[in-house]
Length: 213
Image (cartoon, rainbow, N blue to C red; front, side):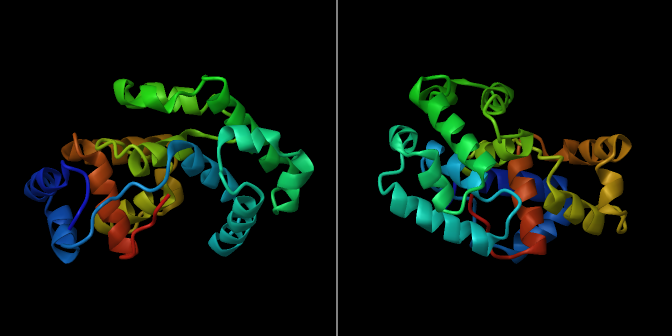
């Protein structure tokens, strides 16, 4: 099993603190969170994949890489909007991708500075980019930066797993409401400082194949 340096310690702590997680962790002994891609391409791919199927997103991403073989902020900014749209991007997503590239190109987003920034400061910086909301920023923290204590309360997979394992099947829509979010937050207090790890294992309880962002 590979993964972040903290993974074995987090597994032990969560298994000791939470019997539900202990069972799930035992069922997935050889998988762990891994980081994929550089910060710009990770966020670009998240924009491409919004509100379309995985298959469609893969096709658009493949065409985008053909149009921009060296995917970088500078290359994206040199491409015409019509070229980006010809890859299958909507007009709005093409605008989002160019705004992302502009943030990286002019230094408003500096990936080298992330290591010294808190999770919330990074979320604030990323959500200044058009097309990137809190959920996307949280997925970036988990999957790209491997931050250990992110609790994505807008994530439907996490809420579905919490409902299934802890709350006797309470409808996920109820957990999206304010009172439901607070209920999940209280339940998740036992996972600190390893909320990302707990979330990742709860995802595995629904789908054993790890998702990579």
